[in-house]
Length: 462
Image (cartoon, rainbow, N blue to C red; front, side, top):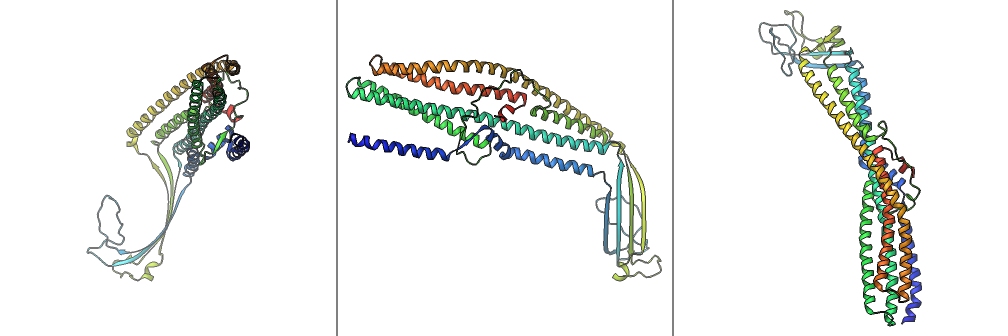
C-alpha cells in the first residue's frame, strides 16, 4: 500500500498543480493604474457629478440667452357675449375683458370675435442685473466642476488606499501559505522521527498544533483578502471581484516627494471650498443688482375682427363669416422704466444674509487649509519613519531566515527541541509579515501626503 501510494502521489501532485495553474490563469490581474481608471469611468457618484456639470453648462447658456428679446405670437377666435358696463375694478385672478359698447340694458346675445397679435419685449438696460446673473450662473458651473474634480480625487484616494490594503493582505496571505507549508514540512519530519522512535510523541502533537494554528491563520487572511477584494470592487464600480492585485504595481523605488507644499490652485478640495465661496459672492452681487431699475423696449402689432356694430342703432352681425374677418389693425411701441422702490428693505436683508454665508465659507476654507497643512506635516514625519522601518526589515528577515534554517538543522540532528524550532518558524513568519506591512506603511504615508497636497500623480504614473 505504501509503494502504491508513493507511485500515485506524483501524478496527483502534477494534476493538482495543473488545475491550480488553470484556475489562476482565469483570475484577472489588475494594476493600480487600471483600478484608478475603472473608478473614474465606472463609479456612479463620479458620473453623476459629471452630469451635474453638464447641466450647469446648459444653465449658463440659458442665462446668457435671457438677454435676447422676447417675441410672442398669439391668435384666437372667441364666441362670447358683449355686454359691457361702466365701472372700475381691481383685477383679481383671471378677469375676462368684455368688449362692446356700454348699453343701458343687458344684452345676453353672444357674437364671434377674433384677434391676432405679435408682442415684443426687450430689456437691454438692466444696470448690471443680467451681467450679475450670468456671473452667478458661471460661478455655479465652476462649483459643479470643482465638486466633480473633488469627488473624483477623493474617490481615487479611497481606491488607492483600498488597493494598497488589498495588495498587502494578498502578500500576507501568500506569506501564511509559506508558513503552512513549512509547518507541514516540520510535521512530516517530526512524524517520521517519532515513528522511528527518535523523538518523543509529544513533538508530534506540538507539530500538529503548529499546523492547525497555521491553517487557522491562513483562513483569517483569506477572509480578510475576500473583504478587501470586495471593497475594492465596490470602489471601482465593478460587478465582478474575480481579480488579484498586480504585485509589481508598488514594487518600485519610493519617489521623493518630501517637503512638497500644498498647491492651493490645484488642490481639488481647496478649489471646491473656494468655488463655494465664489458662488456666494456672486449671489450677493446679484441680489444687490436685482434692486436696480429696468428699462425695457416694448412693441406690438395686432388686428381685430368683430360682429359688433360701431353704431348702437345698427344691428350686430352674429354670423361666423361676418365675424371671422379682421377689420381693425393697430400697432404700438413704447419704452418702459420699472423700479420697485419698496423692495429695498427686503433686498438689503437678503444681501446681508448671503454676506454672512460668504464669511462662513471663508472660515470653512481656512479650516480645511489648516487641516491639510497639519496633515502634510504629519505625512512627512510618517514617511521618514516608514522609510527607517523599511531599512530594518531586510536585516530582520535575513536573521529570521538564518535562525529558522539553523534550528531546523539542529532539530534534525537532535541538538534542540521542537519548541525552539516552532519559535524560529514563528519569527520567520513574523519577519515576512513585517516586510509586507512595512511596504504598506510607506505607500500609505505617501498617499496621506498626496491627499494633503492634492496631487495623485505619483500613483497615476505607476
